[in-house]
Image (tube, rainbow, N blue to C red; front, side, top):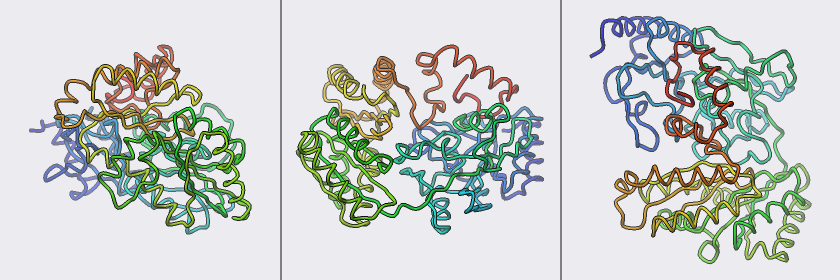
Length: 474
């Protein structure tokens, strides 16, 4: 039962937002359970403000009461960064009602949008204005731009356009004291002090609550070509990437690698997708070329690249999409790996990055270690090879109790993988963030001076420790 102070806070929050937007009863699993359904918390209340000033007032009220706040966007995160703990004392602040597109500036090539705007809706708003917003994720139909920025999300086009950080020109942020930082100007040059925008991006709601953002737009490409290639090894995939850089230049917008077992899971659980080439090759690569030149010229260069790759021995077979629908189907196969893995059962996920030149040795060494230590283990290796980000996931041996497997093996598997990542100069989180799942591992893999500076920043901006406590840094 809430104590008297909590009841007073709830009364005040209802006065601020209205009874309908302060939820304390009924099924709140959409807010309190993480996307992977591995964690369930209990909030004091779920509050749903509709404008920035309401967010500010909620933060002020919680600060006065000493109650911590967990900001949440679309609740699609994978590191338990937006779920309340199980004490029933935290306020979960959902930004889903703040979903408006505030402005489109076609001359400045920017779009200003509220934090709760679903990524797909933002993409569509850009397209309706005749432009491209290139951030693209598997969860784009439900994730929100505020969450994308809070975790500095990546996706499939980082290779050309960068992470969410590189796509953002300005932010509106509510501080831990309930003040509003207005910085939505859309300037590409503003050299007037510390880069507070980039400090907030990737901070996972621990330093401030993002309520709106000004994002970059790009001209629509005149042509987009997609190919699916079979490669005999990770080293060959890296070699193909080098050829693609050399012959396609900035036109190379996507380069994804998928292991055979990852594609087997898609074929097993979604046979209607008709996965090409996977049975006879250890890896497949999905590459995309987008350009402003004529389709005939772009296709000629694309096919020339594949011809060179065949001659070089780094590609054994390939198909080129002949239509937009074929290209979309190839991308749908890639994006279905995570869902197929979930169908197969609980698994151990890793979102790691390694210098591209070291990826072949990392995969070989880590595969051998895990298969030696846990016979029968199944490795689901796929991801954004073009920017060095792999989702190096681990599935239990076949016919194994997956809950028992995770209970008995998750900690040691994580340690083996993370130590291997460190040995090869990588990071234990490439695009998913730290959340609460990796916060206790971070000190073992983060430079101690950098970690201390992060803790100083947290204490300076949130001295009460009320914004998303227990995430990113202790």
